[in-house]
Amino acid sequence: MATMTAAQKKAQAKAEYDAFLDVCPSRKLLDRLSDKWVVLVLAALGGDCDGTPQGMRYSELSRLLAGVSQKMLTQTLRALERDGLISRTATPTVPVTVTYELTPLGGSLYGTVRALKAWAQDHMDDVLAHRATYDASEA
Amino acid sequence: MATMTAAQKKAQAKAEYDAFLDVCPSRKLLDRLSDKWVVLVLAALGGDCDGTPQGMRYSELSRLLAGVSQKMLTQTLRALERDGLISRTATPTVPVTVTYELTPLGGSLYGTVRALKAWAQDHMDDVLAHRATYDASEA
Image (cartoon, rainbow over all chains, first blue to last red; front, side, top):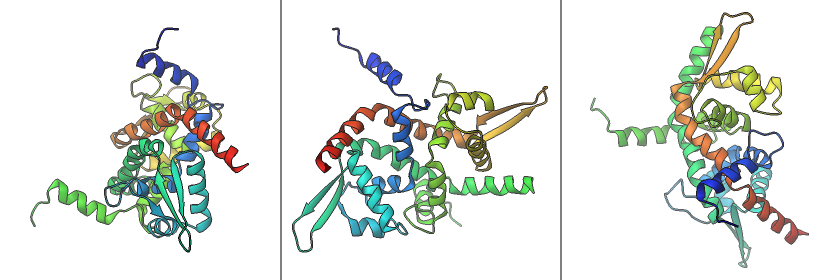
């Protein structure tokens, strides 16, 4: 079998997974990634705060993601671990120290979620102005 | 008052909006952007299907985003219009033709949401393999 070129591989992957399609599993993945807490956890572990990727403990994440409930943070971390985007390491101290880090797969997504978070922060004023205009025209 | 440099403006914006913070309005915006239908609508209008940004009618969007309910699509389009990310143009044909397009602000977000959708499609196999391994180890 002839080796596929990068372009052919890309075309095949596109044919296999197309998130526009109802039945495509990648739409479910997109749904999971499209979550505020997923974006914020990946941004935190990728080093969006201080510029370098870093392992973080549960309590550190909980503090940084101000307002996240324990249930929501636990669910988010577990789902990300299951998807292979973060790894969980337990060190046998007393009490046990649990650290979360981006895997290489999670790292490959980091740039995109960081860009999404940055866009929201950079364009908040524009969006608020548009909302005010829209609401005034509806009134 | 001295003019701020681009770097200073950026630093000020970062200080004003930080989506990690509970009270920050940019977290609410991130929450809205972190929506599967928002990603798919912006991807469609940005030309993720055929490579060029394009105006699309409601019925075209509805067909492309297979499985979206009428209520969900209407809500999504209205929220994106209110935020200034898409524009809505009604042409007085019989029946009226309504077309949606990305605004320049929406266009500035297009690259990021397209990257998110592409990542989900490109890495679906990896994620499914990780899930299988994780589930087997839990069993």
